[in-house]
Length: 85
Image (tube, rainbow, N blue to C red; front, side, top):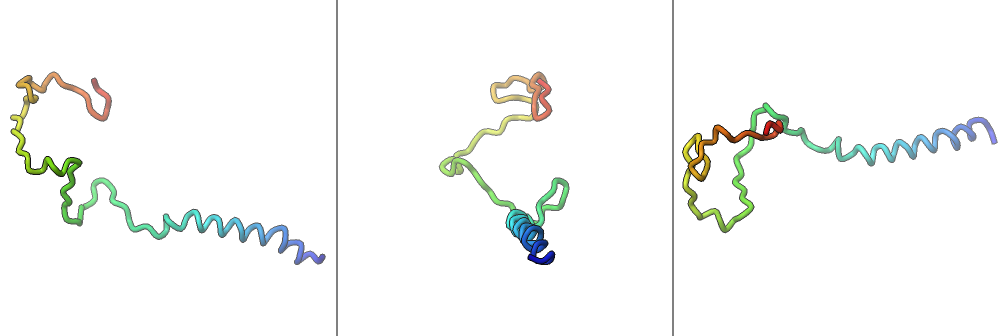
């Protein structure tokens, strides 16, 4: 075996295999369109979605600002995504 054949067998062929595996892994990321980032303009029409399609026709009473559904002021209620309870 010559040096060229040795390098081809032990270096180039494994590198080609790794390259194909890398391209197959990253291909979906390259072909995907741009993602929406918070703060960007929303350029699409609104889509109304509900988990209960049968409840679309049901009317619900609006709760005045500053009150919960039971008439209790909401000022005592805390919480949210930051975990302030």
